[in-house]
Amino acid sequence: MIANYGFKDGSGDWFLTLDTDKCNGCGKCVEVCPPKILEIGLDEIDIFREEPVASVKSGERKKIRYHCAPCKPGFGSELPPCVAACEFAAISHSDGWKKSYKGLRQKV
Amino acid sequence: MVEREKPVEFWRWPETNWVNPDIDWKKGKFITAGVDVGSVSTQAVIMVDGEFFAFGNTRTGSDSPYSAQKGMDYALEKTHLKLENIDYCIGTGYGRVNVPMAQQAITEISCHAKGANFMYGPEVRTVMDMGGQDCKAINVDDRGKVLNFMMNDKCAAGTGRGMEVFADLIHVPVWEIGPRSFQIAKELPPISSTCVVFAKSEVMGLLEQGIPENEIMAAYCSAMAHRIMELLKRLGVKEKFVITGGIAKNEGVVKRLEKELGIKTAEKVWANPNYRKKNYPFDTQLAGAIGAALFAQALLKMGKAKSVKKT
Image (cartoon, rainbow over all chains, first blue to last red; front, side, top):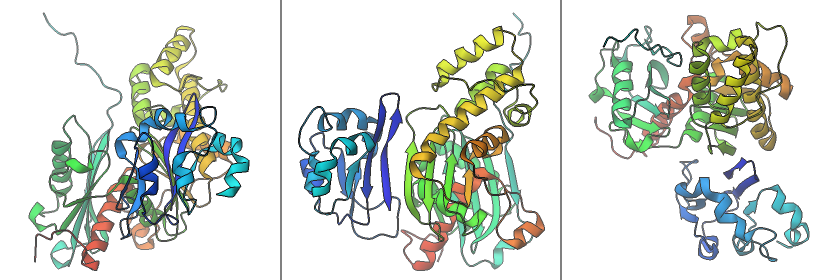
């Protein structure tokens, strides 16, 4: 399942996309996320899934713009830590980000 | 001091309930319930062995547990069924953690996907839930499992609450906005403000210019359709495309969305031919609660229910 957390507003698209089929719940993204908005737990959408999965904390979903902006282009030159930490490439951010990191994205 | 008249509220839509005359719940093995406490409306659905048995559709108040109780009581009203007879109850919607009679809570995204699958049939691929306070676009598979979802819950623009505010402003009952938005001489450009509060002042300005009400309704409906469109464009729409939630009843928005999208929404009829023949009420607002009741049924059957009251 592809879970899109976040929203679109006047300032652009702020979606954090998580491919839960690729996620094994290792929790590396949770450790590296600077604002600590990710968590590992049971899948709340697919209730029959038994293994844990990463998700954005429910209280933080409306604040992704403020939490994720510092890791996005213009602020850092590296991949956002959550994306870099995921060995299965389960995490991505919305379009604006992908375009700027096209070259780097392919390495993942 | 004497009040001149009782205030009239144009946003107030009528509450409904219904019980299936063809089912005897006493013969049922599993009686399950789903309670969808949304931000605007609360629905309780009771199912007997996975068959649609009864529902109650009420407005949510400021107190979620009370609203859930009210919805459930309203659904039970004509059934001669008591709350104790229900084997398993699942809460969903915004107030899902505050449903006193529910043993478990499941997010409304899964429940709407499951409910739409039951109501419109397994061919459904895209579900758009247009609720009171947010809209969700969901891609589903043939079993009603969520494949991809996207939510826009940042503000009330493009949602049922926005429509209610608008209805109150122009003094037209909320259920009349759809049909009346087509009785127009020409189509105005859509209301440009996405924010409900700003849109309100824009509408006020249009009213002052003496523009007919119906044309303003059309402009508001197309603005709403346009906003939903953006969400759907991101996710991708596949047929069969269905809309659930309260806004699905507003043809002013639905028809304009269809036009912009180039895809028709599925007809609002039961997929089950038996239900269609007997003309069971089809209410798009019920999708979440139906989904929750179906999950309750599935969990009971699998023996995964968290705690079962009746043995």
